[in-house]
Image (cartoon, rainbow, N blue to C red):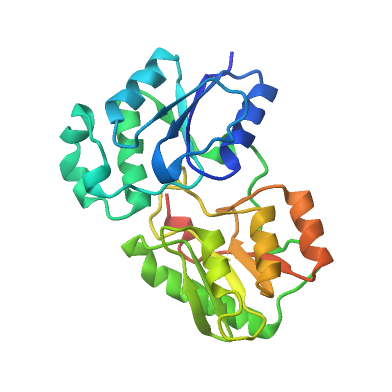
Length: 276
């Protein structure tokens, strides 16, 4: 019998897709959602419990009580301010690590380490929902122009520099000018911020992992909503890291992008072979 999965659910559509995939595989599933900015009400019909992100002991107890053997983290998480973390005793013991964890991604890495120390197997979302990642090259009919390729290169250079500071996984660049950098508000709001910023059109949304990022935790993702917002913002296209970004609703995403002449492409990042 397949291992029962515990899903730590952030915002976005991915947790629900994972629930549906587990049901299709006759795999047991239990979902933990989180209070505050990371709360996700759209998790399908799986048994679930809502807790605070700082209640590490409660999270571990729930996963054990439900008989989960594997755990995945899916969706976007926003770390509360330290004075709002509501740490329980287990989390308090982790306080030195939490204080060193700069950014949302680092906090999730600490949680992943705790889960493994407690005997759970931490798995990436793509292991439960195969086919989410795409290979290098064009994904659809539209092709990046030479100017677009220059913008993608500029964005990748910037993201490599920003990565160690755990600032974000996405930037928007137009004619080598950086229009916006992703912050805690997420990719959708980044795109909206950049729409019409200078009255011009074109530009590229680029998403990639941070150097050294744990590939099981918080991989960059795009979906239909990403494409819709890029179209409304009059961007030229989207570029993601090949084999390292989650691309959801791929058929519908490609059809919508093609219908509006928006390119979607994947690049191979130079340091990828040395990453976790």
